[in-house]
Length: 462
Image (cartoon, rainbow, N blue to C red; front, side, top):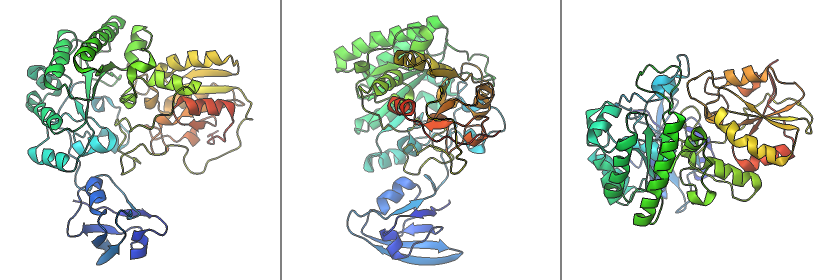
Protein backbone atom coordinates (compact mmCIF):
# COMPACT_ATOMS: atom_id res chain seq x y z
CA UNK A 1 0.00 0.00 0.00
CA UNK A 2 1.30 3.47 -0.88
CA UNK A 3 0.61 6.57 1.16
CA UNK A 4 -0.71 10.02 0.26
CA UNK A 5 1.98 12.58 -0.51
CA UNK A 6 1.41 16.31 -0.09
CA UNK A 7 1.75 18.16 -3.39
CA UNK A 8 0.58 21.65 -2.37
CA UNK A 9 -0.23 23.69 0.74
CA UNK A 10 -2.60 26.62 0.93
CA UNK A 11 -1.15 29.87 2.33
CA UNK A 12 -1.91 30.46 6.02
CA UNK A 13 -3.47 26.99 6.26
CA UNK A 14 -3.58 24.77 9.33
CA UNK A 15 -1.23 22.34 7.59
CA UNK A 16 1.33 25.08 6.95
CA UNK A 17 1.08 26.38 10.52
CA UNK A 18 1.72 22.87 11.85
CA UNK A 19 4.91 22.54 9.82
CA UNK A 20 3.82 20.16 7.05
CA UNK A 21 5.73 20.61 3.80
CA UNK A 22 5.30 19.64 0.17
CA UNK A 23 6.65 16.13 -0.34
CA UNK A 24 5.67 14.83 3.10
CA UNK A 25 4.30 11.30 2.92
CA UNK A 26 1.40 10.79 5.33
CA UNK A 27 1.69 7.40 7.01
CA UNK A 28 -1.26 7.74 9.37
CA UNK A 29 -3.80 10.21 10.74
CA UNK A 30 -4.88 9.68 14.34
CA UNK A 31 -3.55 6.14 14.07
CA UNK A 32 -5.30 5.24 10.79
CA UNK A 33 -3.66 4.89 7.38
CA UNK A 34 -6.15 6.33 4.86
CA UNK A 35 -6.88 4.04 1.91
CA UNK A 36 -8.18 6.74 -0.40
CA UNK A 37 -8.96 10.43 -0.68
CA UNK A 38 -12.50 9.78 0.56
CA UNK A 39 -11.23 8.53 3.89
CA UNK A 40 -8.54 11.23 3.90
CA UNK A 41 -11.17 13.96 3.70
CA UNK A 42 -13.14 12.45 6.57
CA UNK A 43 -10.08 12.02 8.79
CA UNK A 44 -8.70 15.52 8.28
CA UNK A 45 -12.04 17.04 9.30
CA UNK A 46 -11.15 16.43 12.96
CA UNK A 47 -9.98 19.56 14.82
CA UNK A 48 -6.92 17.78 16.23
CA UNK A 49 -4.76 15.54 14.07
CA UNK A 50 -1.78 13.44 15.08
CA UNK A 51 -0.06 12.80 11.76
CA UNK A 52 2.78 10.36 11.35
CA UNK A 53 4.80 11.36 8.31
CA UNK A 54 7.80 10.25 6.30
CA UNK A 55 10.04 13.18 5.38
CA UNK A 56 13.18 12.28 3.49
CA UNK A 57 13.38 8.84 5.12
CA UNK A 58 12.75 10.15 8.65
CA UNK A 59 9.53 9.27 10.47
CA UNK A 60 8.10 12.27 12.31
CA UNK A 61 4.94 13.09 14.22
CA UNK A 62 3.19 16.37 13.45
CA UNK A 63 0.28 17.67 15.49
CA UNK A 64 -2.27 19.82 13.66
CA UNK A 65 -4.72 21.87 15.71
CA UNK A 66 -7.41 23.76 13.83
CA UNK A 67 -10.83 25.22 14.34
CA UNK A 68 -13.85 22.98 13.94
CA UNK A 69 -14.76 22.90 10.26
CA UNK A 70 -11.51 24.55 9.19
CA UNK A 71 -9.95 22.78 6.18
CA UNK A 72 -6.50 21.26 6.53
CA UNK A 73 -5.29 23.13 3.46
CA UNK A 74 -3.16 20.32 2.01
CA UNK A 75 -3.63 18.63 -1.36
CA UNK A 76 -2.44 15.07 -1.95
CA UNK A 77 -1.18 13.33 -5.06
CA UNK A 78 -3.77 10.65 -5.78
CA UNK A 79 -7.34 9.52 -5.32
CA UNK A 80 -6.52 5.99 -4.16
CA UNK A 81 -3.63 5.09 -1.89
CA UNK A 82 -4.18 1.34 -1.92
CA UNK A 83 -4.47 -0.56 -5.19
CA UNK A 84 -7.20 0.24 -7.69
CA UNK A 85 -9.84 -2.48 -7.73
CA UNK A 86 -9.37 -3.62 -11.28
CA UNK A 87 -12.16 -5.03 -13.42
CA UNK A 88 -12.26 -8.80 -13.81
CA UNK A 89 -14.98 -8.69 -16.45
CA UNK A 90 -14.00 -9.35 -20.05
CA UNK A 91 -16.75 -7.49 -21.87
CA UNK A 92 -16.52 -7.86 -25.61
CA UNK A 93 -17.79 -4.29 -26.00
CA UNK A 94 -15.19 -2.76 -23.64
CA UNK A 95 -13.50 0.20 -25.31
CA UNK A 96 -10.27 -0.38 -23.35
CA UNK A 97 -9.74 -3.55 -25.41
CA UNK A 98 -10.14 -1.45 -28.56
CA UNK A 99 -7.32 0.98 -27.88
CA UNK A 100 -4.29 1.03 -30.16
CA UNK A 101 -0.89 0.09 -28.78
CA UNK A 102 1.60 2.67 -27.57
CA UNK A 103 -0.64 4.97 -25.54
CA UNK A 104 -0.07 5.97 -21.90
CA UNK A 105 -0.08 2.87 -19.68
CA UNK A 106 -2.72 4.32 -17.38
CA UNK A 107 -5.26 4.36 -20.21
CA UNK A 108 -5.21 0.56 -20.42
CA UNK A 109 -6.15 0.07 -16.77
CA UNK A 110 -9.72 -1.22 -16.34
CA UNK A 111 -11.28 -0.43 -13.00
CA UNK A 112 -14.46 -1.66 -11.35
CA UNK A 113 -13.97 0.36 -8.18
CA UNK A 114 -16.99 1.87 -6.45
CA UNK A 115 -14.72 4.60 -5.03
CA UNK A 116 -13.86 5.83 -8.51
CA UNK A 117 -17.54 5.66 -9.32
CA UNK A 118 -18.22 8.05 -6.45
CA UNK A 119 -15.25 10.31 -7.17
CA UNK A 120 -15.32 10.49 -10.96
CA UNK A 121 -18.60 9.08 -12.20
CA UNK A 122 -16.96 5.88 -13.50
CA UNK A 123 -19.48 3.11 -14.05
CA UNK A 124 -19.13 -0.06 -11.99
CA UNK A 125 -20.75 -3.42 -12.72
CA UNK A 126 -20.75 -4.32 -8.97
CA UNK A 127 -19.25 -7.75 -9.74
CA UNK A 128 -16.51 -7.09 -7.16
CA UNK A 129 -18.75 -5.37 -4.64
CA UNK A 130 -18.94 -6.88 -1.14
CA UNK A 131 -20.84 -6.57 2.14
CA UNK A 132 -17.97 -4.50 3.53
CA UNK A 133 -18.23 -2.17 0.54
CA UNK A 134 -21.96 -1.77 1.11
CA UNK A 135 -21.38 -0.99 4.77
CA UNK A 136 -18.86 1.70 3.89
CA UNK A 137 -20.99 3.24 1.14
CA UNK A 138 -23.97 3.46 3.48
CA UNK A 139 -22.11 4.61 6.61
CA UNK A 140 -20.09 7.26 4.75
CA UNK A 141 -22.96 8.13 2.39
CA UNK A 142 -20.88 7.70 -0.75
CA UNK A 143 -23.55 8.95 -3.09
CA UNK A 144 -24.14 9.16 -6.00
CA UNK A 145 -22.78 5.98 -7.59
CA UNK A 146 -22.89 4.97 -11.25
CA UNK A 147 -23.82 1.41 -12.19
CA UNK A 148 -23.58 -0.42 -15.51
CA UNK A 149 -26.71 -2.53 -15.89
CA UNK A 150 -26.55 -3.55 -19.58
CA UNK A 151 -29.19 -6.29 -19.08
CA UNK A 152 -31.20 -7.62 -16.16
CA UNK A 153 -31.53 -11.12 -17.61
CA UNK A 154 -28.84 -13.05 -15.67
CA UNK A 155 -27.77 -15.16 -18.63
CA UNK A 156 -27.47 -12.18 -20.97
CA UNK A 157 -25.54 -10.21 -18.37
CA UNK A 158 -23.13 -13.11 -17.74
CA UNK A 159 -22.54 -13.38 -21.48
CA UNK A 160 -21.98 -9.64 -21.89
CA UNK A 161 -19.60 -9.31 -18.93
CA UNK A 162 -18.03 -12.73 -19.51
CA UNK A 163 -18.15 -13.12 -15.76
CA UNK A 164 -20.40 -15.58 -13.93
CA UNK A 165 -20.85 -13.08 -11.08
CA UNK A 166 -22.56 -10.77 -13.53
CA UNK A 167 -25.73 -12.80 -13.24
CA UNK A 168 -26.19 -12.03 -9.54
CA UNK A 169 -24.32 -8.77 -8.92
CA UNK A 170 -27.36 -6.55 -9.51
CA UNK A 171 -28.55 -7.63 -6.06
CA UNK A 172 -26.14 -4.97 -4.82
CA UNK A 173 -28.01 -2.38 -6.86
CA UNK A 174 -31.18 -3.29 -4.97
CA UNK A 175 -29.30 -3.03 -1.68
CA UNK A 176 -27.89 0.39 -2.55
CA UNK A 177 -31.31 1.71 -3.48
CA UNK A 178 -32.85 0.20 -0.34
CA UNK A 179 -30.35 2.28 1.67
CA UNK A 180 -31.30 5.47 -0.21
CA UNK A 181 -28.03 5.70 -2.16
CA UNK A 182 -28.48 7.78 -5.30
CA UNK A 183 -27.64 5.63 -8.32
CA UNK A 184 -27.40 6.53 -11.99
CA UNK A 185 -27.61 3.61 -14.40
CA UNK A 186 -26.25 2.93 -17.85
CA UNK A 187 -26.91 0.43 -20.61
CA UNK A 188 -24.40 0.08 -23.43
CA UNK A 189 -26.66 -1.20 -26.19
CA UNK A 190 -24.98 -3.79 -28.39
CA UNK A 191 -26.89 -4.63 -31.60
CA UNK A 192 -28.15 -8.20 -31.59
CA UNK A 193 -27.12 -8.76 -27.97
CA UNK A 194 -29.10 -6.63 -25.50
CA UNK A 195 -31.39 -4.63 -27.75
CA UNK A 196 -34.86 -5.61 -29.00
CA UNK A 197 -36.77 -7.90 -26.63
CA UNK A 198 -33.86 -8.06 -24.19
CA UNK A 199 -33.90 -4.28 -23.84
CA UNK A 200 -37.68 -4.27 -23.39
CA UNK A 201 -37.35 -6.85 -20.61
CA UNK A 202 -34.58 -4.83 -18.96
CA UNK A 203 -36.67 -1.65 -18.96
CA UNK A 204 -39.58 -3.61 -17.52
CA UNK A 205 -37.35 -5.09 -14.79
CA UNK A 206 -36.04 -1.63 -13.91
CA UNK A 207 -39.61 -0.55 -13.26
CA UNK A 208 -40.30 -3.62 -11.11
CA UNK A 209 -36.99 -4.06 -9.28
CA UNK A 210 -35.19 -0.70 -9.40
CA UNK A 211 -37.88 2.01 -9.53
CA UNK A 212 -35.83 4.24 -7.22
CA UNK A 213 -32.89 4.49 -9.62
CA UNK A 214 -32.32 8.16 -10.45
CA UNK A 215 -32.08 7.71 -14.21
CA UNK A 216 -30.97 5.30 -16.88
CA UNK A 217 -28.84 6.19 -19.91
CA UNK A 218 -28.91 4.18 -23.12
CA UNK A 219 -25.64 4.70 -24.97
CA UNK A 220 -24.60 3.16 -28.30
CA UNK A 221 -21.81 0.65 -28.66
CA UNK A 222 -18.55 2.25 -29.71
CA UNK A 223 -16.47 0.16 -32.12
CA UNK A 224 -12.96 1.29 -32.99
CA UNK A 225 -10.96 -0.06 -35.91
CA UNK A 226 -8.85 -1.95 -33.37
CA UNK A 227 -11.74 -4.13 -32.17
CA UNK A 228 -11.19 -7.88 -32.55
CA UNK A 229 -14.73 -8.90 -31.55
CA UNK A 230 -16.61 -10.23 -34.56
CA UNK A 231 -20.02 -9.86 -32.89
CA UNK A 232 -19.57 -6.18 -32.11
CA UNK A 233 -20.78 -3.78 -34.80
CA UNK A 234 -22.18 -0.24 -34.93
CA UNK A 235 -25.92 0.43 -35.01
CA UNK A 236 -27.68 0.92 -38.30
CA UNK A 237 -29.85 4.00 -38.73
CA UNK A 238 -32.93 1.77 -38.44
CA UNK A 239 -31.70 0.28 -35.17
CA UNK A 240 -30.91 3.73 -33.81
CA UNK A 241 -34.42 4.90 -34.72
CA UNK A 242 -35.91 1.94 -32.89
CA UNK A 243 -33.92 2.82 -29.76
CA UNK A 244 -35.26 6.37 -29.90
CA UNK A 245 -38.80 5.04 -30.27
CA UNK A 246 -38.33 2.55 -27.43
CA UNK A 247 -37.10 5.29 -25.10
CA UNK A 248 -40.04 7.53 -25.97
CA UNK A 249 -42.51 4.69 -25.30
CA UNK A 250 -40.95 3.78 -21.96
CA UNK A 251 -40.71 7.39 -20.88
CA UNK A 252 -44.48 7.52 -21.08
CA UNK A 253 -44.74 4.34 -19.01
CA UNK A 254 -42.35 5.65 -16.36
CA UNK A 255 -44.12 9.00 -16.30
CA UNK A 256 -47.43 7.29 -15.66
CA UNK A 257 -46.07 4.94 -13.00
CA UNK A 258 -43.29 6.95 -11.35
CA UNK A 259 -43.97 10.54 -12.28
CA UNK A 260 -40.66 10.93 -14.16
CA UNK A 261 -39.20 9.83 -17.47
CA UNK A 262 -36.25 7.91 -15.96
CA UNK A 263 -34.80 6.51 -19.22
CA UNK A 264 -32.96 8.59 -21.82
CA UNK A 265 -31.17 7.94 -25.09
CA UNK A 266 -27.74 9.39 -25.78
CA UNK A 267 -27.62 12.25 -28.26
CA UNK A 268 -25.73 10.01 -30.68
CA UNK A 269 -28.87 7.97 -31.24
CA UNK A 270 -30.80 10.97 -32.52
CA UNK A 271 -27.94 11.92 -34.82
CA UNK A 272 -27.63 8.36 -36.17
CA UNK A 273 -31.39 8.07 -36.66
CA UNK A 274 -31.74 11.50 -38.25
CA UNK A 275 -34.34 12.42 -35.65
CA UNK A 276 -34.66 15.82 -33.98
CA UNK A 277 -33.52 16.04 -30.37
CA UNK A 278 -36.26 16.13 -27.74
CA UNK A 279 -37.14 19.56 -26.28
CA UNK A 280 -34.79 20.83 -23.56
CA UNK A 281 -37.47 20.51 -20.88
CA UNK A 282 -37.55 16.76 -21.49
CA UNK A 283 -34.16 16.47 -19.80
CA UNK A 284 -35.11 18.34 -16.62
CA UNK A 285 -31.89 19.55 -14.98
CA UNK A 286 -29.75 17.46 -17.39
CA UNK A 287 -28.60 15.01 -14.68
CA UNK A 288 -26.87 12.69 -17.19
CA UNK A 289 -25.28 15.44 -19.26
CA UNK A 290 -21.80 13.94 -18.86
CA UNK A 291 -23.01 10.65 -20.32
CA UNK A 292 -24.04 12.32 -23.56
CA UNK A 293 -27.69 12.75 -22.55
CA UNK A 294 -29.10 16.15 -23.56
CA UNK A 295 -25.71 17.66 -24.36
CA UNK A 296 -26.92 19.09 -27.66
CA UNK A 297 -29.94 20.84 -26.14
CA UNK A 298 -27.91 22.10 -23.20
CA UNK A 299 -25.21 23.43 -25.53
CA UNK A 300 -27.86 25.11 -27.63
CA UNK A 301 -29.34 26.83 -24.57
CA UNK A 302 -25.92 28.00 -23.41
CA UNK A 303 -25.00 29.25 -26.86
CA UNK A 304 -28.21 31.29 -27.11
CA UNK A 305 -27.92 32.47 -23.51
CA UNK A 306 -31.22 30.86 -22.48
CA UNK A 307 -29.78 28.36 -19.99
CA UNK A 308 -27.16 28.43 -17.27
CA UNK A 309 -23.82 26.68 -17.63
CA UNK A 310 -23.79 23.19 -16.16
CA UNK A 311 -21.07 22.28 -13.69
CA UNK A 312 -21.26 18.50 -13.84
CA UNK A 313 -18.96 15.68 -12.90
CA UNK A 314 -16.45 14.29 -15.31
CA UNK A 315 -17.62 11.65 -17.69
CA UNK A 316 -15.56 8.95 -16.06
CA UNK A 317 -14.06 7.66 -19.31
CA UNK A 318 -10.29 8.10 -18.77
CA UNK A 319 -11.22 10.90 -16.34
CA UNK A 320 -9.38 9.68 -13.26
CA UNK A 321 -5.95 9.11 -14.80
CA UNK A 322 -3.09 11.47 -15.66
CA UNK A 323 -4.03 14.71 -14.04
CA UNK A 324 -7.55 14.19 -12.77
CA UNK A 325 -7.93 15.97 -9.42
CA UNK A 326 -8.00 13.91 -6.24
CA UNK A 327 -11.32 15.42 -5.21
CA UNK A 328 -12.95 13.82 -8.23
CA UNK A 329 -14.39 16.75 -10.16
CA UNK A 330 -13.35 17.77 -13.65
CA UNK A 331 -9.97 19.47 -13.56
CA UNK A 332 -9.32 22.82 -15.12
CA UNK A 333 -8.22 21.66 -18.54
CA UNK A 334 -7.10 24.81 -20.35
CA UNK A 335 -3.77 25.32 -22.01
CA UNK A 336 -0.51 23.85 -20.79
CA UNK A 337 1.95 26.25 -19.17
CA UNK A 338 4.14 28.23 -21.53
CA UNK A 339 4.08 27.94 -25.30
CA UNK A 340 1.99 31.11 -25.71
CA UNK A 341 2.65 32.99 -28.91
CA UNK A 342 1.19 35.92 -30.79
CA UNK A 343 -1.51 34.49 -33.01
CA UNK A 344 -3.90 35.78 -35.66
CA UNK A 345 -5.69 39.07 -35.10
CA UNK A 346 -8.92 38.82 -33.03
CA UNK A 347 -11.14 39.59 -36.03
CA UNK A 348 -9.61 36.85 -38.22
CA UNK A 349 -11.89 34.14 -39.67
CA UNK A 350 -12.62 31.39 -37.16
CA UNK A 351 -12.56 27.61 -37.49
CA UNK A 352 -14.15 25.52 -34.73
CA UNK A 353 -12.51 22.10 -34.43
CA UNK A 354 -14.83 19.26 -33.49
CA UNK A 355 -15.57 15.59 -34.09
CA UNK A 356 -18.21 14.39 -36.57
CA UNK A 357 -20.92 14.16 -33.88
CA UNK A 358 -20.12 17.64 -32.63
CA UNK A 359 -20.12 19.01 -36.16
CA UNK A 360 -23.71 17.87 -36.65
CA UNK A 361 -24.71 19.90 -33.58
CA UNK A 362 -22.54 22.96 -34.15
CA UNK A 363 -23.13 23.52 -37.86
CA UNK A 364 -26.79 24.64 -37.57
CA UNK A 365 -26.05 26.78 -34.49
CA UNK A 366 -23.23 28.63 -36.23
CA UNK A 367 -25.33 29.01 -39.37
CA UNK A 368 -27.94 30.83 -37.29
CA UNK A 369 -25.40 33.52 -36.43
CA UNK A 370 -25.18 34.54 -40.09
CA UNK A 371 -21.43 34.95 -39.74
CA UNK A 372 -19.65 33.91 -42.91
CA UNK A 373 -16.29 34.21 -41.14
CA UNK A 374 -17.05 31.29 -38.79
CA UNK A 375 -16.99 27.68 -39.93
CA UNK A 376 -16.96 24.19 -38.46
CA UNK A 377 -13.85 22.11 -39.11
CA UNK A 378 -14.75 18.45 -38.76
CA UNK A 379 -11.94 16.19 -37.55
CA UNK A 380 -12.49 12.55 -38.65
CA UNK A 381 -11.14 10.17 -36.02
CA UNK A 382 -8.69 7.97 -37.93
CA UNK A 383 -6.69 7.24 -34.78
CA UNK A 384 -9.47 5.17 -33.21
CA UNK A 385 -11.46 4.67 -36.42
CA UNK A 386 -14.67 2.69 -36.55
CA UNK A 387 -17.70 4.70 -35.48
CA UNK A 388 -15.72 6.93 -33.09
CA UNK A 389 -17.11 10.41 -33.66
CA UNK A 390 -17.36 12.16 -30.29
CA UNK A 391 -15.30 15.29 -29.76
CA UNK A 392 -13.89 14.07 -26.45
CA UNK A 393 -11.92 11.34 -28.24
CA UNK A 394 -10.23 13.62 -30.77
CA UNK A 395 -6.47 13.15 -30.63
CA UNK A 396 -3.58 15.38 -31.60
CA UNK A 397 -2.55 13.27 -34.57
CA UNK A 398 -5.94 13.74 -36.25
CA UNK A 399 -6.23 17.42 -35.35
CA UNK A 400 -2.73 18.06 -36.70
CA UNK A 401 -3.53 16.34 -39.98
CA UNK A 402 -6.62 18.48 -40.51
CA UNK A 403 -5.00 21.75 -39.39
CA UNK A 404 -2.05 21.30 -41.73
CA UNK A 405 -4.36 22.07 -44.67
CA UNK A 406 -5.94 25.15 -43.06
CA UNK A 407 -4.91 28.81 -43.65
CA UNK A 408 -2.30 30.18 -41.25
CA UNK A 409 -3.92 33.57 -40.57
CA UNK A 410 -7.17 32.16 -39.16
CA UNK A 411 -8.19 31.55 -35.54
CA UNK A 412 -8.79 27.93 -34.50
CA UNK A 413 -10.87 27.01 -31.46
CA UNK A 414 -10.18 23.68 -29.76
CA UNK A 415 -12.69 22.33 -27.16
CA UNK A 416 -10.99 21.43 -23.88
CA UNK A 417 -12.92 18.17 -23.54
CA UNK A 418 -10.34 16.41 -25.72
CA UNK A 419 -7.50 17.28 -23.34
CA UNK A 420 -6.46 15.73 -20.04
CA UNK A 421 -3.62 17.24 -18.10
CA UNK A 422 -2.98 19.58 -21.03
CA UNK A 423 -2.45 16.84 -23.62
CA UNK A 424 -4.51 14.76 -26.04
CA UNK A 425 -5.11 11.06 -25.43
CA UNK A 426 -2.29 10.22 -27.84
CA UNK A 427 0.11 12.29 -25.72
CA UNK A 428 0.49 15.18 -28.16
CA UNK A 429 0.43 18.72 -26.78
CA UNK A 430 -1.61 21.52 -28.42
CA UNK A 431 1.69 23.41 -28.76
CA UNK A 432 2.84 20.74 -31.24
CA UNK A 433 -0.03 21.38 -33.66
CA UNK A 434 0.85 22.99 -37.01
CA UNK A 435 -1.40 26.01 -36.29
CA UNK A 436 -1.93 27.97 -33.06
CA UNK A 437 -5.17 27.01 -31.32
CA UNK A 438 -7.31 28.66 -28.66
CA UNK A 439 -8.49 26.18 -26.04
CA UNK A 440 -12.11 26.87 -25.11
CA UNK A 441 -14.26 25.25 -22.39
CA UNK A 442 -16.75 22.85 -23.94
CA UNK A 443 -19.98 24.71 -23.36
CA UNK A 444 -22.13 26.96 -25.52
CA UNK A 445 -21.55 30.15 -23.53
CA UNK A 446 -17.76 29.81 -23.77
CA UNK A 447 -17.93 29.20 -27.51
CA UNK A 448 -20.12 32.26 -27.96
CA UNK A 449 -17.69 34.31 -25.89
CA UNK A 450 -14.68 33.06 -27.87
CA UNK A 451 -16.39 34.01 -31.12
CA UNK A 452 -17.12 37.49 -29.81
CA UNK A 453 -13.73 38.14 -28.19
CA UNK A 454 -10.34 36.98 -29.39
CA UNK A 455 -8.08 35.00 -27.04
CA UNK A 456 -4.36 34.29 -26.99
CA UNK A 457 -3.60 30.97 -28.65
CA UNK A 458 -1.39 28.06 -27.68
CA UNK A 459 1.71 28.19 -29.85
CA UNK A 460 2.10 25.96 -32.88
CA UNK A 461 4.88 23.67 -33.98
CA UNK A 462 6.00 24.88 -37.38
